[in-house]
Image 1 (cartoon, rainbow, N blue to C red):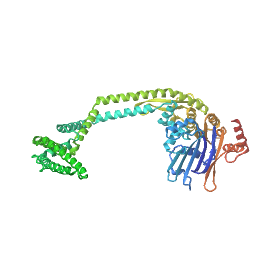
Image 2 (image 1 turned 60 degrees about the vertical axis):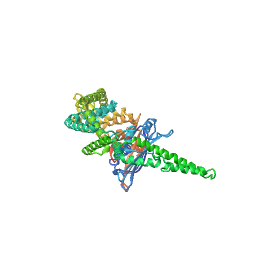
Image 3 (image 1 turned 90 degrees about the horizontal axis):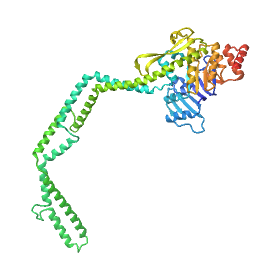
Image 4 (image 1 turned 180 degrees about the horizontal axis):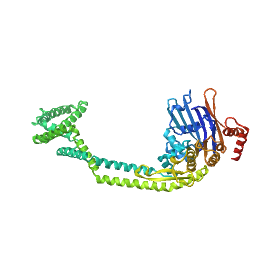
Length: 555
């Protein structure tokens, strides 16, 4: 999925630019200050690098970057997993676009759908591999060295990171339990005492409401009996005199209406209503009789309820909770005590700590094995590249040192050692290599690791600084070889490198009005002129043109 087209609007000093790129090796050259690296900066910005208002061209409202990549099915899986629609059948491009306004706010899209900077960076791993002009700085950073070795060894470090996290949690729990043993003992004793006090009462859920209901009924039992007895007498008097109670009155009314119902048809419905009323009053009377048989004055039970409610309220005042939550408070104390008991089980915690560390150590040893196997292979590959870059007899090694204490990345650290000449002992890169040697070593690493990468586009941003002559010609040939299988973009100041390119772009700056950079793809005489300029400076001599033409013919 190589870059097909790059479109810039109001980016830094570029007003408008559209650049069509081909496969193979493309060199970008131009005078100092023309803005050769702006193109690389734009690609990095489009692929998720941190945005800021400084990239907006002066006088513009926003910078706009769009990149079209060749479509391949390989990236569709990532698009689907990340929640984007895969490219439709027949489509040939993946389009990435990003804008940044003068407030520093950025927006991004992948195939027209909104995307985050983090998603752009993740997708970028499948698209480009960038080697910057200060790549040599990573040679002395242990973390960068280790990351490069792990990438070369194709190590999946997710299991190691997960095992490390599990062990750290177990270790933290054990340390906390040991350090807070006294405090936990005091807290446990407090909870045990509180639980024991409330368990004497042994409240159950919703009991307080039931106690209140039953206590209210027993406390007012006599009034309830009197009311029920009076009501029952009014409905169905004990003397059974039909004229002295409701049932008698209703019964008499029913008989009187029934006697005349054969004359007045409308009385029939009244009879039905009186019969219904008679049945309802009889039901109510029977219910009252049943209630009176069941209810009784029970001073003993009332006294028991009084005593329990007094104890209940005493506990509520002591432990500062509401009466209806006492059972829930007791449940919470029991749960807290169970957690403390689990934390205080040092044997269990120590066993868990040992098990999780053993799992981490197993994962770490597997990573260590792969690192140890890959280190000499990486050293040999870079050593070979160094010979091609003018460091004859030089030797490169990847030294692995066991750490005193384990770390999230494993059990060892990695360091680059180099011997610039035959017969010398390899030593740490930062202590023995000169600036020019560092640049060549960094380039050797870039070329070596690029051959192994999966990104279809390789970008080199002035990584050839500090070299020249035959070595520069070698660098050009190496990039040309890489371009046979992948797209290579290189910002270079070396004519030897530029002359090896399959495509040549010249960056120039217009000084009419506000400065503005542009890129022109050159061929034929225009390309000869640019190579000659790189050879001889601003004044292009006939000799320089002849030399430039010869260089282009040789490639």
